[in-house]
Every structure is written in structure tokens, then in C-alpha cells.
Amino acid sequence: MSRVVVYSSDWCPYCMRAKSLLESKNVAFEEIRVDGKPQLRAEMSSKAGRTSVPQIWIGETHVGGCDDLFALERAGKLDALLKA
Image (cartoon, rainbow, N blue to C red; front, top):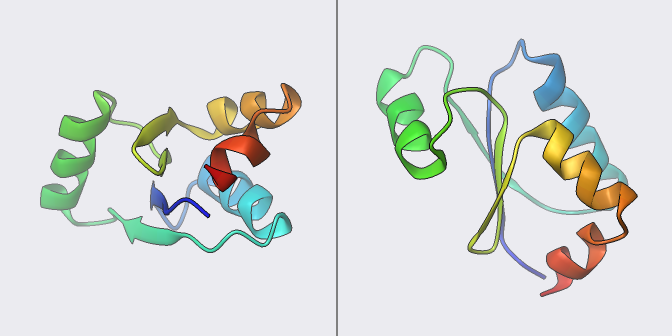
């Protein structure tokens, strides 16, 4: 199972949806909350090239945000990426 990292914010509904999808698949993930932590948000932005949350990595692959995660699920590609 690939390591999954989710940069998130407590108040973000997209973060909640993304985490809910991962939890529904029984996927353990590392959550890095960026609320009030500009250094962590800057780290995320530097790695992702985006400033919005969530930003999700599965293994070495930057998936993107919530919509990107759900697009992988709809395309039937999420499970394979999680197992890689």
C-alpha cells in the first residue's frame, strides 16, 4: 500500500470530502494540517505548485486536490494507485 499524505485545513469542506473517501476505502493517511502554520503551507505550495487545500500525494504521485482524487475514483484508477 502506498503512503498517502494529505495537507489539509480543519475548516475546509473539500478536505473533509477527500479524507472521507480515503477513510471509506480503509486507507491510512498522514494528515498535515496547515491551519495557522505558514511554514507548512509554504512547504505544501512549493511541492504542489498550488496554494489550496487539500493537496494529496499517493506515494510519489501528486494527485492534487479533492476534485482530482474523486476524478481518479470515477475513472477507476484510484485503487490501483493506492496499491502501487
